[in-house]
Structures are given as C-alpha cells and as structure tokens.
Image 1 (cartoon, rainbow, N blue to C red):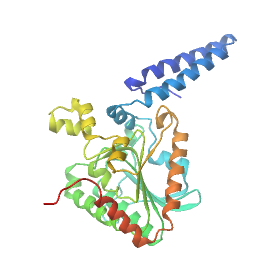
Image 2: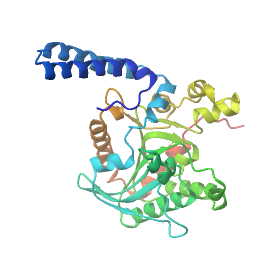
Image 3: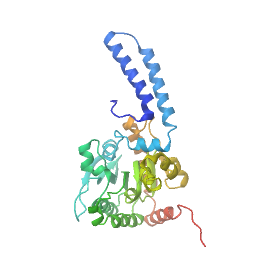
Image 4: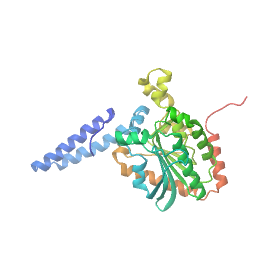
Length: 320
C-alpha cells in the first residue's frame, strides 16, 4: 500500500510498515532469509492497527472520515454493484456532480442508488464540489427517488458530505427549500430506503438525502448538525477547538447508536476503510443486502408509518 498521507496517530503504523518494506527489500536484493523476522513484524503491525483504531477519540474518527484515500460512493459502487446506469440532471437547471444517481444491481437485486461524491485529487474535487450538493443535486436525488417509487425499487443511499453548498447561487436557487422538500418527500416515499453514512455526515447537507427506514453508519464516520470546526467557530470563535466540539456534539457512531439516531454500526477493517477498501466494501454489501431483504416484504403503508414513527420518537421533550 503506497504511503502518501499519514494522520498523526497513524505514524507508529507507518514506521513499522516502512521497516517491513525495508526488510523485504534487503531479503530480495541480498538473498538473506528474513522470513521469520518479517512475519513477526507483520503480526505486530496487525496488532498495532487493531489497538490504535479501537481506541480512537471522536476527533480522530473525524480525521479518519476525511482521509483522502477513504473510499467514496463510486469506489464502493464499483465493488458492490453491477450494471450501474447513471442518470443526470434535475430537469430544471443542470446536473450536479456532487451527487451520483442511477440504477444498479446489488447481488441480483435491482435498486436505485444515490450517493454524495468527493474527489480523490484537486481536479476531481473541484468537479465534484468537494461533495457539497447544490439545490439541483437535491432535486436530482428526488427525481431518482420518485423513479424508484414508480418502478417499485428500493433506494440505497451513501452519505458523505461536509455540508450543502453555502454559496449565493445555491441560496438564490432555493437550497433550503430543496432540502426541506426532500425531507418531506422521503418521509412518505412508498419504497424502502436504506442509508449508510460512509464518511462525513454534516448538517442539512446530509439530512437532505438522509431520511431512512434503516440508517447505518460506518465505524469511523461522523454525523452531526454542524461540523466540529463550524461549532468551534461559533462557540469559541476559534476553529482550532474542533476536538472539544467533536466531544460536545457526540459525533461518533457509538454516540449516535446510543442516542437512537442511527440503527446500526458497520465495522471497518483494522486501520480504517482506507487500509482495506475491498473488505470495507464486503461489509457494506453484506449489510445492505440483509436490510433490503428484511424490508422487501413490508407493506408500503406500514413502511411509511414505521419510518415516520422512527423519527418522531427521536429526542426528549416535555409537554406542559
């Protein structure tokens, strides 16, 4: 695995990985038998990955969710689906490449897929607007959902965004209305909706495609009403307090499962999804299939009633 980007807490892993690579190079070039030493170090490396990643802080999980080598929607779709046919445009203004929508097969099951898409380099990130959707992106997603309802197909959604695009043009074209409209329409959509937060799930940018029958979250993803840095800028007037904000907001998957906001945590390979994208995709696919199979025979009216009840039951309130 190429070493291009390293988080601070990953440095012991990278140092040991480099040592293993050096020993393999020496053994290959000089014909020295270092097999037992290499195997010992590889076992140590595996244990180190497990130990580090099972004790991550909330802020460290936020950093992992933003890792530039972390798989995005199209990376997962290439591994878990077949015959993906993308649709473009909102039939109103233009196409928004921050979100991909289309028809696909997942292990023989026909689905409509929707997913926010970031870029793996600067050029692609500009093209994809860093995964920040415009109003036309939300309207394109709604168009895809309505097609799913029309053809009796379940909707599979992948959330990964730092937020909806906050530009003036987006506001002029009705960003808030587009998000609100999607929330309303998803609440009463007459077909199953299975959502996975695969990376970042920030604010209305995530909620605009985030109403589900089942909401799953990858182990090192985060989900919140605002980014930790945005919260820090408001509360402390300093984005450097992101770590404290992440703790206060309780953005991690275990927090949100405890609060009843999400339904399931998907474990990631030791070292995070970016360390073994194939295994991460296998775990994602297994859980999506399990939920699709569980929901397929639920009557449509019951499905909608259960979905609405799920969100009404969140939170704590008092009646006077």
